[in-house]
Image (tube, rainbow, N blue to C red; front, side, top):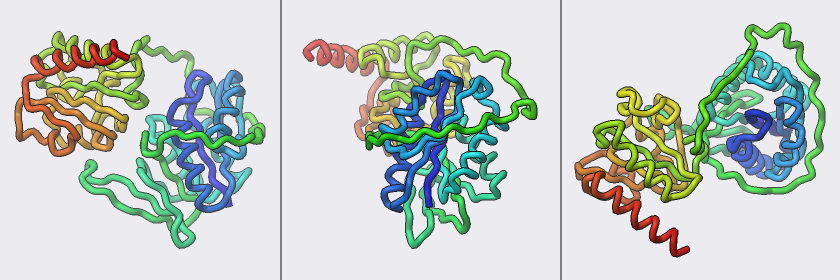
Length: 327
């Protein structure tokens, strides 16, 4: 038996999700007493990233380094994963529950005629079969699912497993380059806006705002707080804010945005609609500020302040700056 993990990269560099997924695979592999293999595909510059996968617990890396993998092509990436499956015949295949992973995992599962559990928060090996825990009904409940057949295909929610080192000298084996001429699409160019802050899905701290900020111009309050907290802090927003055009969609946190679980999450002027809670309630520590003492956000908050964000946030920013200046 073995476990296969898809290691996500972007621009020739591993993403945080790759380290987390490999860590999840290592925990499961140790429980089952089997080998952990990572499949890594990307442009030629990706070769040097294999060592990082070994650092987080991969026993072997199946490496596809070619320009054809430079941009995400669903069919080509699925071919690579299926080729890796054919090589090692795994009992379990893990993907990150990122935008790419959520697109790729079902494609691979369909090709293998395998069962799929998405956005899982826990994976166990019980009585000879894989069991997973995942949220349902917008995060209102968590359900336990089991797989009847093999391989079991799962995508792992970000931050469900924190990246940890379990160093190994990973054996690197080359994957055959696929025939890209059969691809149904081709990426000629990919452009992204330059961002000074990390993506909300990978940030250590998120400062998120809702309709309580009243208008886009008031977002400077959140930017000041994020600056005080440090460079690893991202800005987030509720769906209402994004729909109003105050903030870009890539900052949206919630059921129809991004699911996040940072160590620290600030919910400022956010009432706590169930759609938003579904995207952030698994954060390790939640700090909420809202003038409505009955706001649903306080039911999930670790620390809650009933007050006006325009009074509380500047004071909070000031105190954080004082603390950091003393360090």
